[in-house]
Length: 374
Image 1: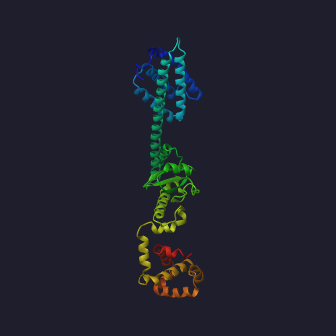
Image 2 (image 1 turned 30 degrees about the vertical axis):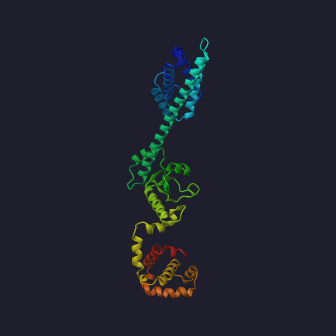
Image 3 (image 1 turned 180 degrees about the vertical axis):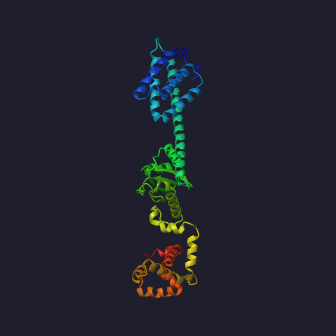
């Protein structure tokens, strides 16, 4: 609304309009339990003065919209809902309109129509600016909050955790009380904020290397929260050992993605052998190459049943009957294969260290075949 388009005498009402609107806004603020002397109280006073002056004079709208955008930001910072500011704007507009209509002398309908149309559009513009400021502040705060929590998680899982003072300062900034112990959970997906809220239990999360890394004080079940996702729950460790839980859960998730562990939510403590064998690429293969040399020159048709029999016998602690039961075969068949295995491996079958190495090597080299045995 330009200055020329408004009735000229509206400018003469400026002092009265400002006084009434300001009184109504302050009453509305008291009704919402707000302070009239705090930052928001001063801000709304400035907003009323600016809004009334701009409307009655037909001045440029830009500076006033900027004032209300800042009011919207302050609303978010002080913990109010944006609807609360809109309701105050509505009260101000109603008071402004009542003061215009009640002024002495007849008011031509055409003049009232012009004022009403301008006032409704003006209040909508102010409310829109406030809402935009509110959302901008919300986005900025969410970004800052995510950055603060990411820093805390990064500090906890880095190779050399910082001194207590730095760690406590980071935790205070993230508003996360440091627990005595925690566990790390690695989850497929990058919706860290959503997962932290859903997990509850004082969880915080961030995205590191394309996956969500969740820290929480307990390892209580997350099956429902993480249903339909691959996720690995690391062991509960002392706070200062958070990196260990993080690394274990991270490796377990990588194994899940490579089909080396079951899908769904896995407890890392239940898969430590698989994690150990896969931890350093090439080590398990080197172990298998070294200790399974006697089987290398056999045909696949001979190698497979002998490997399965050796694995079952080792798991049965050298007992033939349990091994035969696990293989669903006759004990005599197991004894026959064991004679062949003794010819191939010799005294290694009686050495505890070599037997352990053989069992690990068999699992690493032929895991699908070995899984048939108990």
